Length: 371
Image 1 (cartoon, rainbow, N blue to C red):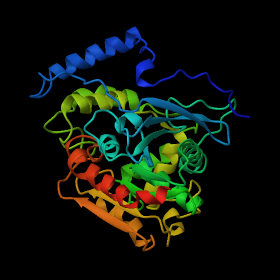
Image 2 (image 1 turned 180 degrees about the horizontal axis):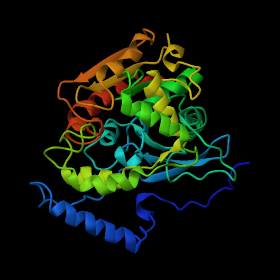
Image 3 (image 1 turned 60 degrees about the horizontal axis):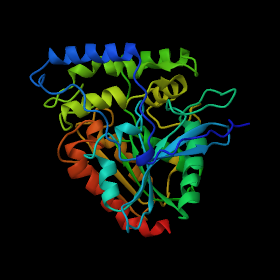
């Protein structure tokens, strides 16, 4: 049985509920991080964090067949626009704010092109309500349960036959898994950004991480949200963050804000499945019985694959291999000339000047298939 219906507030922009005051501990932590930022780097005179300015103004619940209640966040099209629905799905360990933090990002471009945009949050997000006795879950579960329930909710609301799909990293991998599970999924075109389907041979550290992940209970996870908050003062406008998140294409206060607000903890079931992908080199199911890439062979979905040589999370070859398996009805690749990190694909300068226009143009080419 699913959870009882929730009385949700009207969250249109004019009636947003007041944001609750952060607990005292959180305020002390933010103060400590601000002080740490002021002591680090040449851009220490910047504000520490620019708070999110999301474009989504409506929260829409959807319920899965196994009883989870999750949410879509909608950014309606401009008045008079065609309004074909497009679903945006965030990456691993991130949440919807990674795609909707500021106007300089992917969502803003799709809105400007007249699409009706829906940001997906699934059972891996903190906003989701589990059933009374939730089982552990993994990528297979999200692709089989959450994606079809969310897509059907969008189609029921809009009256369209199909949706567009944009996945960042893990979001694109969820689409590949879902298409392998259901070849007739109602998707008119898709764009996957930095979504690996093959993985290089793991080193000793990756093998050790795989062994640890197999011991991790499915209901527990990794406290990545708190870790990113503690590391966020080191993110800089000129140098980005780490060797894979950003290479400097995102404004410092926005990048530090994303690390504070746009990150989610990783559940144990997801960690185990992803480490299995890395250890086997294959995008497979949790039991390593199905190679999802092989299951996609000949699929007719129009697909755009975007990658960057600067993305240490997903090298171009790891993402582009999917095009060798897809059918000939429509496929295209874009390897960015400017090396950029994984987050740069969806937020900041590169997103507004390169990936965003490419994705919007691709979906615009196929938008009539939505009707």
